[in-house]
Image (cartoon, rainbow, N blue to C red):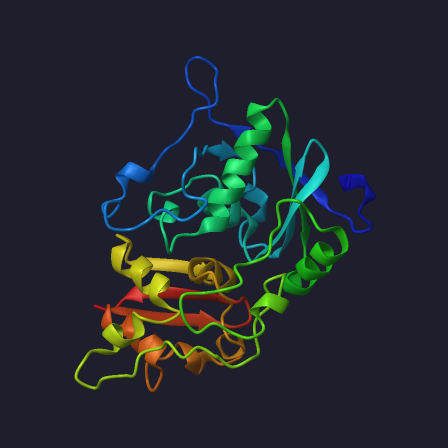
Length: 277
């Protein structure tokens, strides 16, 4: 549908401008070889590329939460939510890191970046639109349900472990409230570390990300962690700060074993991971 047909008011932010080479052609990016574990980790289904770097002026939207829309030639093609539009566009979509091309990386970023690239390579334009709201999760879900944009897709129906009975009936990525039905999770062995146990479970991609990053501080929206996991966080992660504390929580002991602490902000649905000195 055309952006003008939306009943909600969205502000036009900018038209995406792709980086080009000296010949005036879109500069195609293939970052995969720069990943130092590329010979050990498989690419995920959206990690093959090619990708692009692009620019949109989001300087007025730093730390601004809300719902954003990508349009391709004025047609609404993607609806997303964010707690910080500037960071979402500049740090996530517009610059695909080598790590994000591989299993455990942020597949949505790769998929959308490639889709933007293909529109522009074929002579089209991609626009960015935004509406500010604190209820961005609910707003996003309602808009996706009503308009079914072509770039929004259902999450995987199976996960490596801790598969839930409701995943198949949760097409828009809402947080799951059912209990795990997996029988594949290993029995905890007190002779092994918490990390060795947890590495076999749902949070393995997050541990891999923390272990391999060269940063000492990482800022994540909860939705970004869900993209890394390719699975929803439990309700308790959104409602209780103690969920992020390693005291009595195996999943949190996993990142504590790697030397990280987690400082959540439930109001903004963000968390800061920091190396413990």
